[in-house]
Amino acid sequence: MRLQWNRLATVLLLIASSTLLFGQSPAAANILKPPPGAKVAIIIWEDLECPQCARMAPYVVQAEQKYAIPVVRYNYPLPQHSWAMDAAVMAEYFDSKSPKLGVDFREYIFQNQAKITRWNLQRIADDFAQKHNTPFPFLLDPQGKLRAAVQHDKSLGDQVGVSYTPTIYVVSKNNRVEVKDPGELFSTIEQMRSGG
Image (tube, helix red, strand yellow):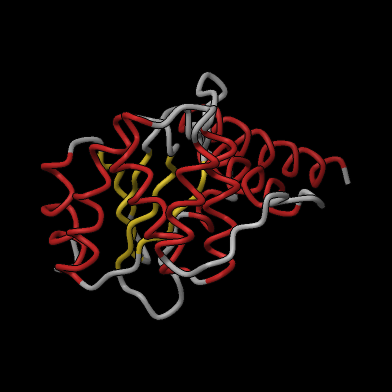
């Protein structure tokens, strides 16, 4: 019995130390996988107020179109950004109408990011909704479900070790590579697609 407890303690210690060494929980292996049916995917944690996220967004869209691979987007609003959480909640709302509408909203926010403030974000989201013939309620999230979805995304990011945005991974069934430079995105996808 004592031998079994020692083995169990050793396994738990190895798991804990791998989390400390690599910054990822054991659950990260399940998070950083392509969606069912996809061989390669891009997984991204982004903050809609983050200038680097706005710079990286066109590359992600180009890669998605060029390679016909899925992009899994997660919200990761940083606390120092005054309107990032509200924008993420709005993005979740548009996602609930259609995934494409959610992506279009994110791209719209990134394209207009320089002129957005905490005070005009609602008006900009209203303009987007009108252009896309989509109702946009004044009380967007009265029950807090959309905010909870954003918090869930953030929690997944924390499990993976996200500490900045954008955090982008190119993933396959057996491999994952974090991409920090736009110039590396396409070559990483090509390597993954060729089995690398």
